[in-house]
Image (cartoon, rainbow, N blue to C red):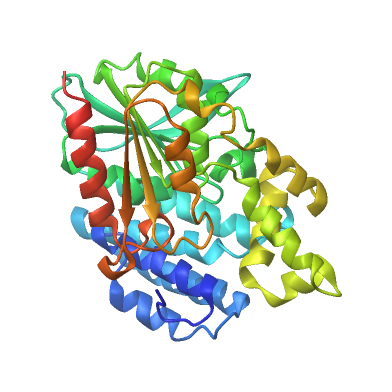
Length: 389
């Protein structure tokens, strides 16, 4: 589906940002007027224009808060956080030494923190013990009764951040009575930027301490804890539940069997060009971003070594260890993981269901961007049926 741009990556990222309007994370008019000032494929203009929109919307929120308009402040600050995240998206050539990238990331974090503090039940920012450090997390409660409720543990994928998790899943879960614990694992959000933690394939080592933490919370019903992972998180979550059997259900949004295939495809395309990977990066916004983002959040500078490292991110020989009910989601025109949800679904031996989102229904893009309501309806209706005690 094309959205505002012919260039595939710009189209997808614009749709991703706009799709969060479902939960107040964007305003369509703001998206349209911002994107019309950004030429096709111009990453510098993308960052500058989205940053300008974010700053303008943040000022609306700050002024509203100063005047005592709590709801207006919350709404504007939530949109500003999403726009700051979008402004930083393509700044991956050298983010560790990019002062503007750091500023945008911090602004996204701060506006989000200020927004969710204004929810009817304010979100709790927590740090989850992990090895010799901690992971940043938010606990969102569906009510303040203190009674145990079914709870979703949620994390993103290759380019996600904690602040996006609310719009991507938590807001829909809260409406349906679920508590939600979201977190940044190694390689994600502030853990890579502020702690230097990189991705690891044995994601059970990440999820297990998160589950340990969740089970200490009086609001969490220990018998009804589910795990949801988005994008690369579709591999990460599957890997985790293969080893941690305390989770009552798992949703792969979307299913990923072998993450390395994305990089292997890129390597084959590069091999067909005289200039190799450098030429392909110059031609393709997506490939340029894929390699640069991977170099950063995997902590590997050499692209060949990066491609090798991704080979450990596979469910081959592991999928049959999963015992909990599994929901595998698939996008009809997924440009990243085409065919992979069916592969992981076929490898599963636990109770399972596959839902395929069609393009002609608006849900065919990777992770169903632009179809948040449809994605949440299918996901939580399924969870309602499997988390019955």
